[in-house]
Image (tube, rainbow, N blue to C red; front, side, top):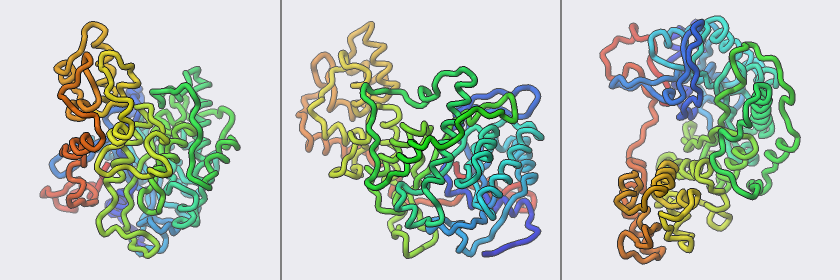
Length: 487
């Protein structure tokens, strides 16, 4: 470990923004909040995911760690205690003033704050809480804040943090308790799940106190007639235990600032993909359980990168499993917005996604008995299952056919991806071309499409974090910051 005393603010920024690049933050705020006239800043739901690049494009979040010091020695983490890296920590005053200075210069619209664990979870949480208190109550910052809570911290600290943030997240780290025990033995799965449950109950109580509708409807677009059975990997009972224990705050507590709500943008979590041997079926089963039972807004999947070259970690000579990560995100979208369930996409015998086809096309090819679908008669939920038809397209079809009979020209004008959909639909009882509904034939045609494999997925990938002044002729002594997060 390299410890530097009397480190400048700029040097701390260099260290702590670089250390934050492994936290996934590709999400919008989920919050629209105008300035109240008495404070500074606002939060715009659609405008939070930007980043400063060398050509001058603008980001919105300052993504940084409070500290990269950590008492834990997780095998996969670049900031683990056994690594010989430069360590740095902000003070609450430094972090709050830095955020405000960046905002005043129009560099950011908000803050994404994570942290290692300094001394203890409670000690670290108290420092983070003080930083956000200074931002909200002293500097009157009204912009977006996404903060990662520390598992194992006192529930009262978790709750106080919830009144200052827009979105909170607690990283699940690895999909199962066994894999967490293997690579992060200092961490406890239940200690991670309990604050997730606490935040869920706190949001629910806050909604009830304000007389708002059940916030579950914000997360779920589709419902099914029969309740879902909780599917979890074999031997993984931690989620069941936390749900049954009803862990978390059970009553409404007075908030420190009367004009704010408790975690209004909800919560998210992150899982590392490829560090352990779980199948896609196991990963998606855990994600589905989190969505259905903890009301998470997002589950993020982070392709494993062997930054430590540890013998206990898998080799990544071919690069991180980015295509696998991509397929998981596609399947995650199907769970959240298309009404699919994990057991429809995968099972014990078919436990991993097809690397050549996206999960929706793969499902359709394995269920050709339900196709072709008649565009002018199929209901909305059936249309959603057709490859090439998304939620917006399905809504347009349902609305347009009330006044006219649709043909393929109409579908093309609506933006439907006919090069996928033409194998699975009919218009007025006719297919677009004479096509044999046969799995091998359709598979060959779909695989031949250039957009099936994500563009550049197998090209040279770099993970260098974007710098504010990359390739620009600024002298280092005049720069305010060297690196910002790749959001």
